[in-house]
Length: 276
Image (cartoon, rainbow, N blue to C red; front, top):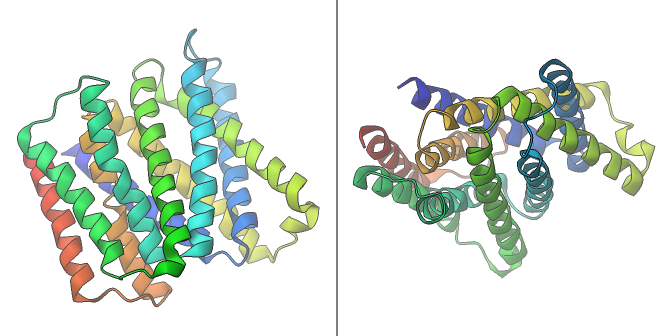
């Protein structure tokens, strides 16, 4: 139960920082500030924890690269589509991919109820997108969101293996330090220093978003050391329920009874996972 509560708390934090990223007046600069804050925290963790164990650098580098690709896809999705549609599709693609990989590649086992719950969570999250009947103009946004979901699944699998080979704080520190400094530097090279010429509230919001993002990620990594990878991945993606609520309340995006029903399917999946 503690693991479940931790992952659900991470889901709330994850939806929050994604909403902050979507609502930033300059999303590119906002995302760079997110990563800068995370990079500084990662640097502190690295100074405290030291080098990772021998033979684990591949996991750290792979996760950092996958996170960079994920953030690029996320930015493209938010530039092209609505938050309440792109966020569910990106997050809903991940759980079933993780379930398949964890069973076939990692040889983890899922109880029948857990597997049914993972499938229900994925189906409910993806339904949240297509209830909106996206038109042809949104096809690029949909592809960006699906690609983002595949990156989420990829780093989730890498992380799920890596946290059993080294302390969570060590792994998290190195991954965040690498990606956290790489992205702001890339943005500076692309758009120049005027990119960060933002109002003080926007800068503070961006830096705060990075702290929230890192807290959400750290909670999930901890949970992955104590639970089944596919079940944790599915539970984490319940953040889309909170994301849909945020989209309706703060971005004035329609929620409606059909999306509420899809959210109920997600809740049913959570119940199956927790009872399995």
